[in-house]
Image (cartoon, rainbow, N blue to C red; front, top):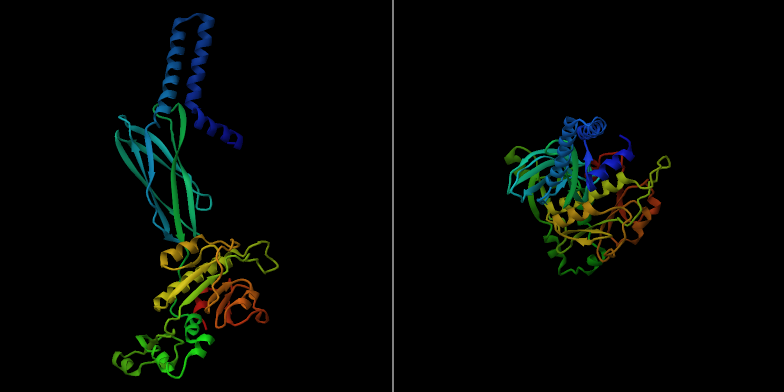
Length: 392
């Protein structure tokens, strides 16, 4: 079916009626019998023509009435992580004293989320409701909104299609992927590095008190790469396997701010790429921000996240929703706090020159150490992000 024909049939269904094939046949036969009756003056042809026209008119009227008195309510959609399936549910209420039969429902999803979802509904009892549910796969994080539910019917005789759109706003939140990190030297080392300003203010009186904060927090099994000096030999001998001490590495009162350079354009630096945005790199940066946030929370480190549009965010659900909504090149509505060291995630090496002393960075670009300031790590988009975050 050509696009112009499709637009015509859709317009007819929305504003009037769209005859089905059987409707065209019955209408053509009725007209043919009427023309034949006027030529032959045969009464039985008039009867056939009148009966066919009556069926056509009644079918058209009943098709339009089939969608009257319906109310559609979309139930809340629970957030999921990228790669999981959304569960979408709607409640279709029949407010009329007559049952509604043989309906087709179409949920007009956003194109980036997926194709429209279609299904057939056999019966909605009178003065009752039907709950319709389906699941939709997700590939990318984001906040998706859509409005329209469409119902179609050719009831009761299948001669005419009629379509009606209903407003049922939907909002689906797809969180970024959170990687499970066993260790992250970038955060561990940042915690062990005291801010110079704080370090200068620590006197001989309170310096021993500062060291007390680096006490053993817990014991865990040894992982490859753990320093030998952290092995607790007495406990290891008791359990028959190596046990490692985890220390409270952050100084008292110090918190971590993970800042995502979302106002940057994230231009692809590779000359062979035609894409104006390095989408994969920015998606990795969002994943890294979410993963580092939860890793820091696991260590009981006070942690916050900053984006150009949302500013400083706290709380895991608020952080996940903000990271789901952020996009490269978004306007900066909130300044970046520069009072304390931050963990900077960017694609622009020169942006590290504005960071406070003691900050660390992750850069999604070609290694150019002469353009950077401070300590950090370059991320290769083609390699595993989890492996790179676990490496020193």
